[in-house]
Length: 239
Length: 123
Image 1: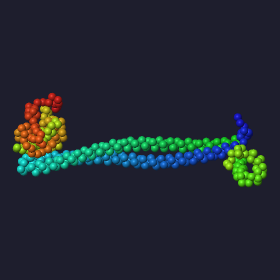
Image 2: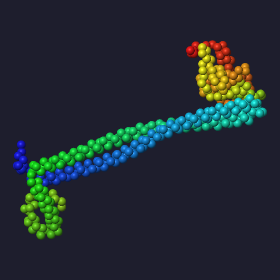
Image 3: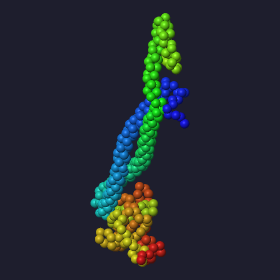
Image 4: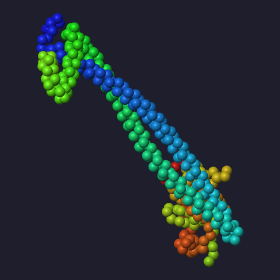
């Protein structure tokens, strides 16, 4: 068990400050991730609404297709009846004899030919409609799969957002625990870190200066050397 | 060559000729009713009961004929064309092809004998 009053000697104030800064940065990242996931989820929700609108339109197409098929059936029956009427007119003409009824027979034959063509065209329409219905069925299946995918992605985003929020909460707790562990030293460490940052800036400036005025810089380096020795890895500062 | 007026019908995949003096009218197939304890069928056509001679599978058409002064309907035929064609020894010649007269004798004989159907009997 560690005595809460005692401070771990192996962790320096600067290391503690770095840990704290890393904690803060991680928390900021987690908060950003959560926010981005929320935005993405909002976008997905909009897409889901649009997808449902498209699915509704396709369902309407199914109903329209049924209406078209019914109309086509009525047309086919009507043309069939008209064909029978033409044949009956021809039969009347045939009974009248060639001299009187020939014109009627010829006319009825012409009518029958035209109606046969109309029937063929209607058959073709029926085939095209069947093709369209097959395509539409494929669309319905595709849209259904797409809807399932969007729902699953949305659920995954929600779970990820919850996880990011949990991470933020854990990081908050960690920061609190950190503060309890190091007591007021955390504030001192933060101040120290700020000081170190200033010194690091000074060191950078010094390097730049040494390139421009080597003699003056040497004197300054001598002045600052005890201070620079306090900062770990001060050689890593950008040149 | 003498011309014959009439109707060309499709019967069992073959064309056959029905003279205009026999074929009277073509109508969509109405509801057919089987005569009890007989193979014959009846249809109500223009308010009159007409005997129906089934010559094949129902085609959706009924050809109303007049045979020996009696109205008889034929089912199982597809009406094809009406016209005047040169007569041939068996029927008419259409575009150089001999089309025989539709043979109704067997169907009429069966119908007139009143032979009960062995396949199905009415209650």
